[in-house]
Length: 357
Ligand SMILES: Nc1nc2c(ncn2[C@@H]2O[C@H](COP(=O)(O)OP(=O)(O)OP(=O)(O)O)[C@@H](O)[C@H]2O)c(=O)[nH]1
Ligand SMILES: [Mg+2]
Image (cartoon, rainbow, N blue to C red):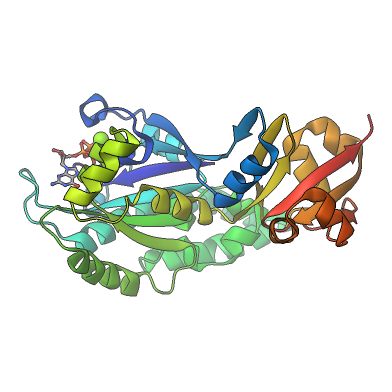
């Protein structure tokens, strides 16, 4: 699961990257078009509980990967689209974290978050439009030569073009998500997006919330968009501290907790995934799975042999397991189910796969 941190130049992307991943210094990344990659674990109290119960040799949480991208040019207005290199890196990503500046900057002055966001959105729309137009030209030719198999694509692309020409993102067109052909284009303006307001230390949380409300109003019709805010600078400092130092630091800043965990969780939620667990003495592990997938696919995530030789899964919901207090009690209470390959996995399922290869 990879999310790209994008935003205008100097909006604090690298600081945000450091806040979330504890990774590279911002200077290391400035003016680079190749991204820095940071891997972070998604904390989960259920995994902690299972760990306490099994006392395993190894614990493996779910991970999210962030890429620190170079700044968008902010020149969408002049019709300049994003650089090819930049695009080739962000097109394949699962989602975007859009960093919006809400701090005073020496080079760019007072912040204008909504205006900046609109600029970024416009860049994405223009970039998608250029892809749509190119493809449309080819498909229109094919259809006019009597190749009927392209007429559906022609219709869909025309619809997409009309939407983009109204300066609207493709997220608003549900076919983009449902149709394989359209999904293949990996349109930027259709990607799930977390908008993060990078707030200056001289702003209060109420200031941030006021701006968030404006942004929320602007994107209110768009599916798969979430909003959050943080003091990226502060959080980046926090990321470099030991847990004891960090709690002292938070107290000094009169903050209850850091925003990092919350933002990582939000990033994960954006991706339409659930978590299932495998648990035993050797390893307790959380796995992510696309919502709606079946037991046999879950088995395949763990090991391809398990998918190939799948017999059945023994499943207990985390809440049932916790309520029962032990695996044997869960068995006695009839909470451990035998499920076949087509069982749709639910968030929090603890699964044991029986297989034969
Ligand atoms: N006050 C304040 N300054 C910040 C914050 N985040 C970033 N900055 C400052 O803004 C400047 C740019 O930050 P970067 O993280 O390098 O911005 P960027 O978006 O990665 O920039 P490019 O990669 O060059 O596009 C630096 O001088 C940071 O110290 C913040 O939360 N508060
Ligand atoms: Mg940077």
